[in-house]
Amino acid sequence: MSTQRGYFTADEVRAAEAELFTRVPDGVPMQRAAHGLATVVAGELRVRTGGVAGRSVTLLVGSGDNGGDALWAGSMLRRRGVAVTAVLLNPDRAHAKGLAALRKAGGRVRDEVGAPDLVIDGIVGISGHGALRPDAAELVAALEVPIVAADLPSGVDPDTGAITGPAVRAAVTVAFGAYKPVHVLAAPHCGRIELVPIGLQLPEPKLAAPAPASIGASWPVPDEHDDKYTQGVTGVCAGSADYPGAAVLCTGAAVLATSGMVRYAGTGSADVLAEFPEVIATQHVSEVGRVQAWVFGPGAGTDADARKRLTEILATDLPVVVDADGLTMLAAEPELVRGRSAPTVLTPHAGEFARLTGAEIGADRVAAARALAEDWRLTVLLKGRATVVATPDAPVLVNEAGASWAATAGAGDVLSGIIGALLAAGHTPAWAAASAARAHSLAANLAAHEGHPEAAPISATPLLHHLRPAIRTLRSLARPEL
Figure 1 (spheres, rainbow, N blue to C red):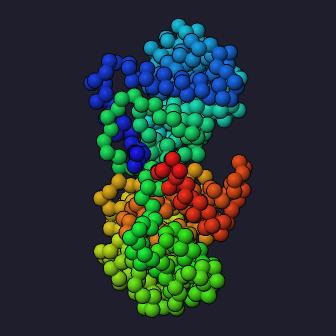
Figure 2 (cartoon, helix red, strand yellow):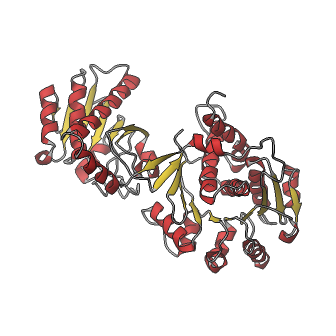
Figure 3 (cartoon, helix red, strand yellow):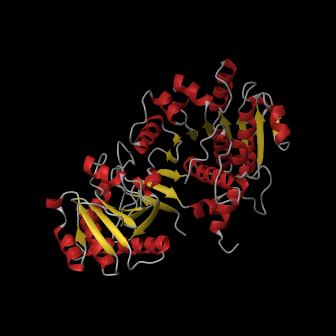
């Protein structure tokens, strides 16, 4: 079972391609890529139109190798009876051999897109940066048919997923040889992603997504030797008179995530116990008793009493998750956590990140999260549709949610509770944060659909109550016979 999917930068891919060219004859990698692209396009035609022969495809062809891939793929589609038209955005620099192959197969070169069934985006590849140029942007904006992107959607940065202007939004992206960061950081513009192996030998990834099946296989569940203490006891300090719901959501997530014990400290005891009577609740951190990890911050306030509770928790040698109001206090007093030797996880959204660092995230979210993690020597979970988890001296982990249903008030409180429970169960901060993000996003998607093909907006409460179905789904991936 593969434990992760790696994503490789343009420089890493180019280095791997250079090594590949020393092992295989010239032109073979492009032929492999083009064949894979043509196969995917033919499949899309069959699904969308009921057949391949007699259908039509237009190629948007730039000057680089991606344009060559599109032209060669077009020649292969033409031999299968597809009417293929190429629009050359830079005719003087079109890939000569690919263009010759297309013409020999009977493909045409025109200045207009026409009315195809599908369009192949071969405008730019991994060497391209910045938005589409005006002529390409005009062509793409006028399209009313699905686009299949060759390697990546043109106009989207391959390494950061940044979009600074007009860009292709593909229905399908055919990745050549390796997944690139764009495929996870700008997933909405990539659509479904199909990988075509071309023989690259790649290094260990510096950016990776844990496989859902591996998360399910490692999710803490009790065995014959466990009791309520051995599975991990989670401490939660959240909520206040102003935000009692935060206490319920955060504590409830810790309860539902594992089968151990949850202890709550704070003013929301009555609300928490009304929803989750199995929780052991008290008013003060000092009265909680023994725990294996702490969660602090959701709805906790930022007054002197809240600061006292935060410093008391950070003074322990236990793993701690800090979220929401806790992050606000750390932004004002970073020394509270920067020297901490015990595992610590911060869970900022973009605004909280800016307060912590004094600067906006910028185009490169992975680099931003990595820099904060390295500087403060802790784990940073940077929230977003693509949630980034950075830990010092380790690969960055990423979770692409598949949708944005978790963008709702209180969802972050749920996420923090899940992370805390996984830390209490003994998992590393990086694994706990990335696995919690996966389960959290899956719970949001399940809640939004509720067994229906069409989704509807949700709030944090149904997200919380779909956490256990999400965990069951992840565990079923690890044991597909169930």
